[in-house]
Amino acid sequence: MMKHLFNGIALAFQFFSVVPVRKELPLEKKDVTAMYAGLPLLGALLGSASLFIVFILRDYTEASPLLVAFLVVLFLAAATGGLHLDGLADVGDAYFSYQDRERRLEIMGDPRIGAFGTMVLLFAVLGKIIVAAELIDELPLVVLILIPVLSRTGLLLLFSTTQSAKNNGLASFFRQRADGKWLLFAACLYLLISAGLLIYWLGLVPAAVILLSFLFALWVYRKWCLRQFGGVTGDLFGAYIEGAELLLWTALLFFI
Image (cartoon, rainbow, N blue to C red; front, side):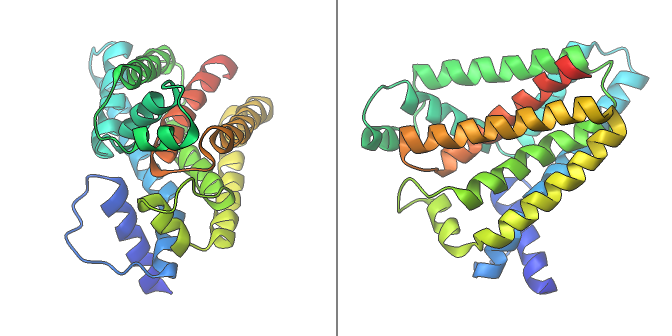
């Protein structure tokens, strides 16, 4: 069991970060399940690094909140290899093409970025920088750890409860090899832990509002994926990560 756990964590770094894992790892069902279950842990590491960046720049330099926010967003994009941003751009191109479902899936598979994808990407990145800049001086820094944890916990819920939109692609490949029930259990466990920490750091009412907004947005996004694409793909997962983090930043801005 421990072997599968370590393989899964290594796979999470290999597929979802720029950390070099130069080893051929098995892709058995338990390994793939452990990989997805380990994504919130990867999120916790990214959040901890973000906390360190903000702590050093905010408390020990004269850097402006805008510069600090820009560097945090830049770090998160670089640490994931721009994977989620790429997915967001592809989804923007596909959705705003106003084509039928099959054509939208084809557009998402095109490695080139179009005008709509560029606009969606621009607004998302700028939005995250602006909202983060507004929060930098007021936000309890420990909450920074939970933003990427919650976004990836939502990804687990989406992954384990939603069918694939197509039979090919990496996301479909992994979904066929993952244990959805275990991932749903892991997601609920991460959610409970995150809820407890948010209540401890922010108080009951702000934590409840933030979590309910997060879960409602996840439900809406799932329904949207099913209606527009017939399920989920790797690009839709990446777009979800970016959208969920922007939502969490915005909810923190209004409710703390």
